[in-house]
Amino acid sequence: MEFNDRPRKNEKAESIKYVNELIGKARAESKLEDIPKLEKLAEMLNTTKYGLVWEEHAEQVEKEMKTKIPVFIENKQKKLKDNENSTKFNFLLEGDNLHTLHLLEKTHLGKIDVIYIDPPYNTGTKEGAFRYNDKLVLNDDTYIHSKWLSFMHARLSIAEKLLTNNGVLFLHIDENEYAQVKLLLDEIFGEGAFVENIIWNKRVPKNDKGIGAIHEYVLIYTKSPRIEFQVEKEGLEEIFELVTKAKESGKTPLEAQKLLRAFYKDDENDYPRAVTLYNCVDNNYRVFGKINMSWPNGNTIGPRYDVIHPKTGKPVKVPARGWRWNTETLDEALKGNSQNLEDGSFLRGRVWYAKDEKTQISSVKYLSETNRMLLKSIVSLKSDGSLSLEKLGFKKNEFAYAKPVTLVKKLIESITYNNQNATVLDFFAGSGTTGQAVIELNDEDGGDRQFILATNNENNIAEEVTYERMRRISKGTDKYDSRPINLSYFKTGFVNKKDFPDVSLEYELLKHITPLVELEFGIDIDNPIVQIVLNEEQLDSLINKNKLVSNSTLFIHPDVFLDEYQNQTLRNLQIKTQEIPSYFFGTEMWSK
Image (cartoon, rainbow, N blue to C red; front, side):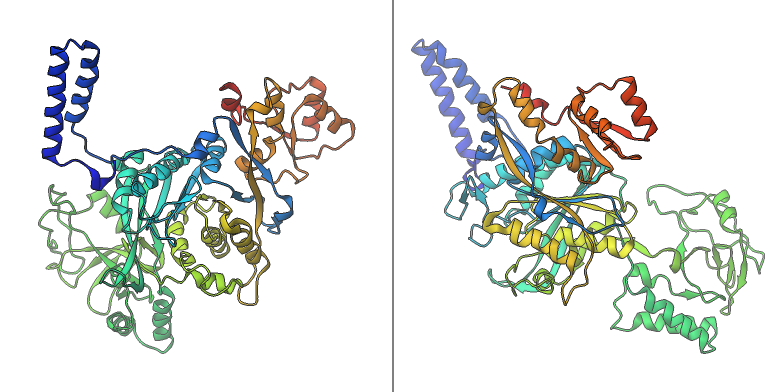
């Protein structure tokens, strides 16, 4: 049912009344078999439901999976292998993303740290429409919203399962489906998983509805309520340079402090409060901020005790609701060097005292030690994604709707700055912005994040844009410095159950184990220190022909049982063994 087609309250009452009349008529005419069906219909009409309701539509690709098992086939000609500093491989997966997610459910269940997606906005126009069952869904489609919701529900339901317990989903959207997808995400993830609706200020207005629209949305969901999204404070170098130059020119710390505060007040320097709070300079020319020591919770009362001023010997003013810290925390903070500042105030360890007891104390934090702040719910970054592609040699404005790399980097970095080995998935990869963002983040902070990009190949986008973008990043252009990448390119293929009856299906599926092993463990099977063994004859051959590599890893099929000689050989060569997961194709082999 579409939103604009829902029955109004009086229509619902009339419908219930009509069904009850039919029940009475059935009883009068002794049509007893019709009564249970009509009573069930009346019950359904009388049920109150809050949430998202839509006309579910079956998707052809989902139906096909009942008889056609999706598999990955590697295109070895497109492999990129030039990052010697990392043993990890990134992956580009070509095909319908529902097939891809179905396979990732086998290899990455509960293993993805970040999902970043920019799905079709379902604008109903050719530029922003999406394809459903090989047909563009346009404004003249009666079920334009229902088809989009069915499409997204199938994919987001799997995506939720792929995330780790601390995993995060970033989902771009605009006004066309914002309300609907918010309810959909609440249903799949749970309302408690919602973190925030980031407003992306694109700065460039779009005037097609009589108003200058300059924003889109990024919905954030996470399985963990304890996660903080933090970004680097910008412009710190200028602040430290200003104070350093003041020191070198012979200015006192107090004079440097006055320069710093004037710098913050300059209209050209638009620093957030998280930076301007640090507006003091100590005797060592270190920039610090004074943090309020009042009890923060308005509904409760904090501890109350006397704090003696170091000069007057009198108790300082106690906050109305008590102190933020207990006495033990305060005593610990007071440990350290003491400084008498030029303005008459005092530093004792990490505590600041005013010149007399009339002002309450503050805790002290140094700017050099707090270089991060919480991600703000409004992010202002120009929509210049197409410029990043131009630098890589693509035609100007050929991809006008590509997201800016700076935005994707900011969001991903906000949650992976302390998890630089994170795995990032984008199953609406499009032009590959997420891949470039991860590559540049690793280059900037020395991280070893891994990305998995999934996209269809409509208009050859997977081969000629997504992959080509990665290749050009790897090799570099005259406007873009090269950044080494390890990348494997897999394309979705299918094994038709009807073609392989009985046990022959298992043997056929075993041929497609290698890509799944590579994908799950983020490795390259062509590397001599990684090998796959599917049967005992293959292992004997490796041993007899001396093709085993010391300090390597063997991925062994669960039906292969090692004898003592084989085990001893592997121990002598210090070879690790890893069982190939039996769940890769088990469900497909067991189901009819």
